[in-house]
Image (cartoon, rainbow, N blue to C red; front, side, top):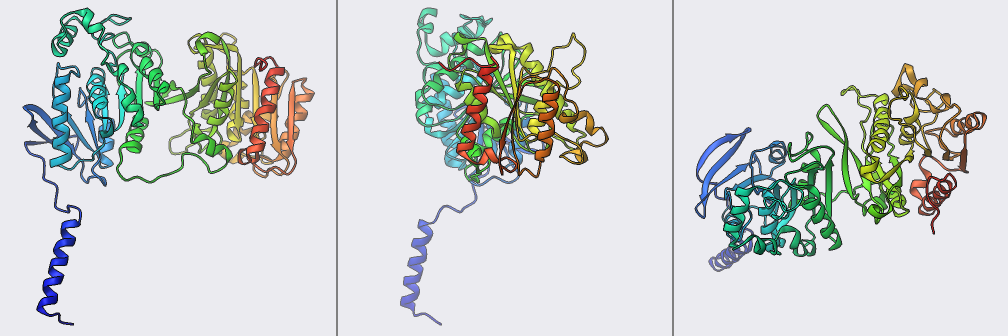
Length: 547
């Protein structure tokens, strides 16, 4: 149908109005300066506010144009950046060296941020990366601009210049850089600098109020930027303010090397918090225990082994007042998943419960069965044993009693827990045998009548708990349902009989009609299981009575 000239004018005016109201769909202006290759991506070098700047661009930007901003040492340990570029993030760096996060540096950062978010339309909220002294830049800018920060990843970060470069604590300090602090911040004396209350550890409330999540990776043997004067102090204060911080500790590691061999935890942290548009996926299963796990976070994660360049972690839930109460018992819990799946978060509610009862709660990250990678169920068991040995070896550092280590697990995790005492080596080795076992609907019989023979293969009997019961097994509490058709109840009955015949202590809780995983789905049964376990551990002198 043809429209009249009057109708055409009206429609044209309406279209003009709609276009004015629509979001800007013009192409974003390309970055200026010299173009070069950086690990297969385009790098642009230019100047902002009189300072060298660079941006590395992804092949295709993720929705909303998320980005990562380095405080210092751009290009060192580049794996996280490369993976984030593959996921559509931009990477940026402004070179203002020797300013150590001073007010002048913050001013230059303000200009750079305005340039990248305004002219080049990068996301309003940025992920900050503070490596070593880069922590001063990131945290000092973030404290002044908390609503512009998506998250902060600190790697052995300087959080208090009195520690480094001042060297007024445990660290070595740096005379050259301390002079720079005095100069850049305008202090007239050491005493004035030491009285300054604008370090990252002093200005955390704006970040906590803005709910900015933090991740710190650090070595606990760092004598350059001592972790307890920097990350440890910052974490304690941030948590006291209600802030969320994840800590990944590398035992025996100093200030170098930075980062992680497997940067997956870093990449996932940044992507989860800095992506502008992301799917909201639940962290755990949608059952009673899964829902509880989503609200819990460990005190810290500690690397207990590195295999083929990949770190494996203990997720630690520390009891309140650990420093005053130690040594305390330890409760190590292992997730199930048929040896092929699952994650430590699944068992957080168990670790958290026993941490609240005064134990060190630990959820285990271990290798999974993977034919392509060549890992077997024997490797799963070996990791459980390594974890127990690590806990015993580091008992003093962790504040635990090495003779009160309880190991628990559900399903295949229950199997790994029970198997920690198998083939334990020579008498001179640190024992992996636990002092108590808590088995939840475990894989207890790996024969053809039970579960796992096909996954283990010919040597299945070596890893079958029911076929390896002998005198001297630790006190054990076992929970199993009579209708379990995954790990059949008959195997649990046979295990109970073998334990009795061998003169071992066993408490057997039978749930009539319970199927596989029954206690994980029902809140009342879950709480009942925890209380029954607690009572058993008290009886076995593995946990003090609750006064």
